[in-house]
Amino acid sequence: MSVLDLAWQDFLAASWPQLAARGRVCAPPDLPHPSVSGFERPWIAEPAGQVADWTVSLADGSRLHAHEYGDGGLVVHRDALDPAQGLGRAAGHVVCETSIGRAVALVALGTLLALGLTHLGIGFRRVPLERLVTA
Image (spheres, rainbow, N blue to C red):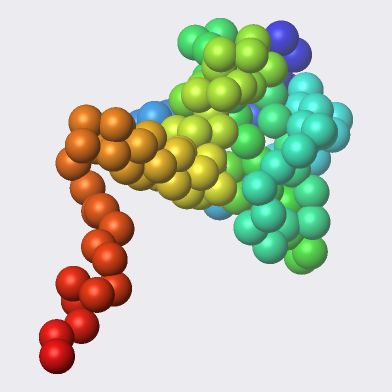
């Protein structure tokens, strides 16, 4: 786990209620850049109009995630599950905290439900065309 710069620690303490409630916070422009403050570049991030992403692991198993935009502005949120802390947390993060993961999980759940209902004999059945057409 990286050591977070003192100015960022103060920002984190002041912003914690909003971050813990899954909010997003604009970082003040006087904060040091994440690259010199203990943050690292993640190997992948969901696109949201940002030009760069910066993350730092927190002691509670979550991570701070800063989106850097073209104008230099930073918008920070907290990922409840830090993907850097193991495969289970990485999978949980993708499914629970990304829009792509939630969409894939929803499709997978729907598919499993349809297969389960079909296995139980509940669901759509093919009806011969002759039965649908009346003379």
